[in-house]
Structure formats: structure tokens, C-alpha cells
Length: 91
Length: 263
Image 1 (cartoon, one colour):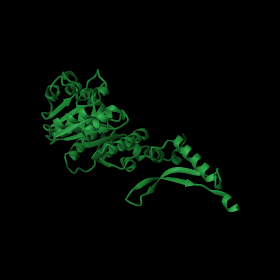
Image 2: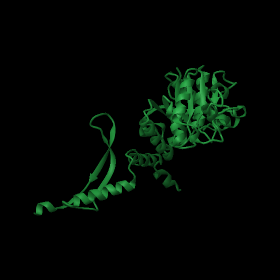
Image 3: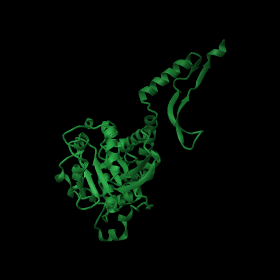
Image 4: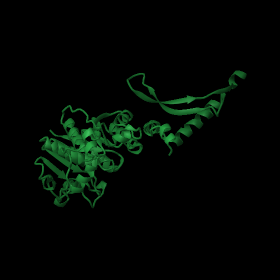
């Protein structure tokens, strides 16, 4: 590692913290990556019956969100599903 | 009536047994009557850390199975008049005991002791369930590493599910030099992630290895780790104790004389 790298190098503790936060969200929700994949596929299947969606732009994950009822955060299922075309409106 | 405290972590090797030995000895130094119970059946360790391995006659399983009375199995620590150890059985397994039996044992010991400290085995199986069964409070020990913190989070979830009344965090083996250069999570980082109350921060200190070699808890000694453990004991006993300045070893004098480099 050169001197330039030494100065550019960011501490690894923030990487550890970010990775932990992500892994704990799915740990706490009791939701493995395999289950998430199944949920994603099921959601795609259901929505695709009515709407054409952009599969490449699709993003489904479990995140933390501010609780509406008490202080602190709660896990939430976040889904960003871009719509390509409304099939229903064609009728 | 005494208080039952379980020392647990999920991950192995983060310092549960060392914490149990030192916090328990610290409480005894504060003139509390203390019994340490090694609940790690089959992998007994608390006895060697306490330096009491040559005095074992009966063990936890003997007591549970009624082969002896509780007081026959308790080893009195001659260095501290209020301190006792109930060692684990080495040749049995975790299924030799049930959570119900552990709860009953803890309740009997409450009558006589101020503090009953349970040293929990690693893992989340039967041994963990046995150790937490009779406990009022839990100390969750972790090191500032992703693996240990992740397991601690799982343990905290299980403790909540088992309706543990109070759960406190001990961040063990912190290296301030690494925290300062951003290569180790700080105790604040870990506390923020795990979201439970912090009760102690213990620096990585080579005097722990030295004291364990000798079977002598280092709590109460002048080392940073010894003082950190004493502070945990005092906080458990209800004192308000400020957190230690772990940067102390970088002080002008220790640099000047270059000795006692403590980690």
C-alpha cells in the first residue's frame, strides 16, 4: 500500500457498520435472501396480471422506517416497481 | 432476595467466562454474597479461569440430579469470603438439565445469595435456554466485530422473546488505537446498532491473558480492563459510575517511560 492509498483510504469500521445494519434488518425480519427472492417473484407474478412492469428497474427489500405509533424504527417491506404499460387501461 | 444475572453472547470466544469471573469477583469485593454458576455442561471453563479447578468434588448436574446438596457442590473461594462457584459437569451434555430445573435451582440460591451469575454456553440451543431460564437480567457480551455483533443481535431478540426483564450490553476487547484510525467500530457504534443499554466497555488488555494464565481474576487491579470490570460490578450494584477514558495508556507519562503498554 502506497502513501497515496494511505491518505485515500477510508476506515473500515464504517463498512462494518453499514454491512451489519443491512444484514440485521433481514435477520430481524426472519427473512433469508431465498425467501426475499420468492416474495419478489410472487409479487411480480401478481402485478404482471394487471400491469406490465419493468423487471430490470424492480427493487424489493426490507428496510427500517420510522414507526408511526411509537418512537424508534420498525422493519418495512419496500418495493419500487416501475410500470411500463397499463394493460387494464387498454380495454 | 438475590438477583439472577445471565452472561451470554451467542458467539463463542468473546469473553463470557472472563466477564462472569471478573464481574462476579468484583461484586464479591463490594461485599455482596455471590455465586458463579458454570452452565456450560460438557465444556467446563469457569473453574480454570477462577483458579478453582483442583477443588471440584460435585458439580451442577450432581445438584440437579440430587446426588448431593447444593452446599456440598459449592466451592468457596478462599481469596474472597463472599464468593462461591458451582462448577459444571465435564462428562455430561446440555440435555442433562432442563430450563425448569435451572429455574428451581436459581430460586433456591436466591434465598442465600445477593447475586447469582450464570455463565452461558455459546449458541442458542438447550444450553442457552437452560442458562436464561431463571434469570432476571442478562449481560450480552460482544466484541466490536461484525460476526459477534450479529450474533449478539440474535441473542437480544431471543431474550426479548423469552421476556427477559433487563438486558445490558458489554463491549469487550475494544482497541482504542483501531477505533481512532477508523478501523474498529466504537462502543457507541455497537450500542447504536444493538439498541440496548450499555453497562460496560472493556479494552483489549494483555493483562487479561496473564491473569487467566494464573487463575486469578484481574478485577480491582490497576489495569484498564480490571477497572472496567469493577465499574460493571458497581453499576450492577446500583452505583452511577462514569465510563473510563480508554485513551489513558497514551498519556504523556506512559509514553515517556515506554512501559506498561496496555492493550
